[in-house]
Amino acid sequence: MRRTLVVSWTHLLLWGLALSPMLCGNACAADFRTLYSFGAVAGGLDPTGGLIADEAGKFYGTTTEGGNGTACGTQGCGVVFRLKRDGSEKVLYNFQGGNDGWSPSGRLLADESGNLYGTTEFGGGNTCGIYGQGCGTVFRVSPDGTETVLYAFMGGKNDGATPQAGLIADQVGNLYGTTLAGGGGTCTSVFGDGCGAVFELAPSGTETLLHAFTGGTRDGASPSSALITDQAGNLYGVTDYGGGQGCSGNGCGTVFKLAPDGTETVLHVFTGGRKDGEFPQGALIANQAGNLYGTTVGGGHENRRCGDLRCGTVFRLAPDGTLTLLHAFQAGKYDGQFPAGGLVEDMAGNFYGTTEAGGHGRHIRNGGGCFPYQGCGTIFELAADGAETVLYRLKTTDGRLPVGGLIADKAGNCYGVTELGGGNGCGYGCGTVFKLKP
Image (cartoon, helix red, strand yellow):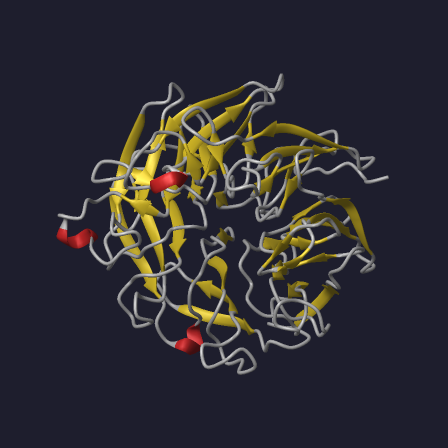
C-alpha cells in the first residue's frame, strides 16, 4: 500500500521557497532577458528539463549533453548545474556515461538538505537499452557534488526503462516517477521495448512498479512527463501515446489516474483532430476543484504550417471526465505551435506556458533558422476565459525550443530554458536560461 503523498497538487519541488512551479504572483510580461547561454562543452549543452530554485534565487537544472564525460562521445554525457542571479554557472556534477548514468532530461527535485534528485535516460551499467549501456537511473547529487545512483533500471517485463521526466516525493522519502519504455506490453520504439511504467522507489533502494502500461485501445503508452498527486495519494499523469488506434495507429495519448492500491483509471483518451488534442507531453496541474489542466503537442485547428499533427492545444479535464479545449494554437506570426512544457498558473487563474515553435512567419527575418521555419517558439498567457496573449516571440539569439516549462517568483518573473539557440556554437546554439519580467 502506497503512503499518502503530501505534495498535494504540486510537483517537482520540495523546496517551497523563492519560486513556485505552479503560481505566478502577477502576470508575466514581455521584458525578456537571456540570463545564460550555454556554449562550452564543459559547462553543459542542451538543457531540456526546466529549472528549480532555492530561497537565495540560485537556479538548478540539467543538460542532456556536455560536461567532461567521454563515454558518450565528444559532446559529453550531461551535467547538473547551478546558475546564480549574476549569470555565473557552476557544474555540480559531470555524468560519465557508465554506472552513473547519462543524459538527464527531466526537472530536478530537491530536499530540505539541498540534495538534488533526478533521472537519466540511459546508463546505469546494465546491458539493456538502445545503446546497450543501461536503461537509465535515479540519482542523488549532494551539496558537495557527490553523486549516488539510487536505482539502475533493468528494462524488460518486470522493470521500467528510459525515464525522461522528473520525480515527486512523499513525506517519508519515497520517490515516484515514470519511464518511457519497459514494463512489458507490446510497444516497440527507438527507446526500447515495452509501453512504459509508473514506479515507486523507497529510501532503501527498493523499487516497485505501480503500473505497467499496455498501450492498445485500453491503456496509454510511453509516459514522458512528471506525475502530480492529490491529498488522497492518487497519482495523475499523461501518456504520449496509446488509448486507441488513431494517430497513425499508435494512439493519441491519455490522461490517467493511479489509485494508492495500484488501480489505474483512464480519465481521457485523446482522439486528435479539430475537437481534441493529441500527444500530451507536459506535466498536468490541477486546481482545488479537481480540474486538470495540460497541453498537447498536436490536435486543434487545421493549419498547413503544422501539417497533419496540427498545432497543439491547452485543455481542461473536469472531474466528471468532460474535456474542454481552452485554446488551439494556430502558429505563424501571431501564435505559437507545439506546446510541450506544461503550464503554470497565477492567483487569478491565468495560465502561462511555452511553445516549441511559432511566433514568426517565414518572411520575418529574425524567425529564420528555427524549426519548422515558423519561428523559435513563444511564451504565452491564457486567461481563464481562454483568451490568449503571446507575451514574447523568441529569436534565434534568445534561444529556441523552450521545452522545459516555466517557474515563477512572487514578483511574477518567469524563468525557463531553451534546448537550443543562444548563438554559442552547436550549430543551432547550445541552449539558454531566460527570464521574462513584469
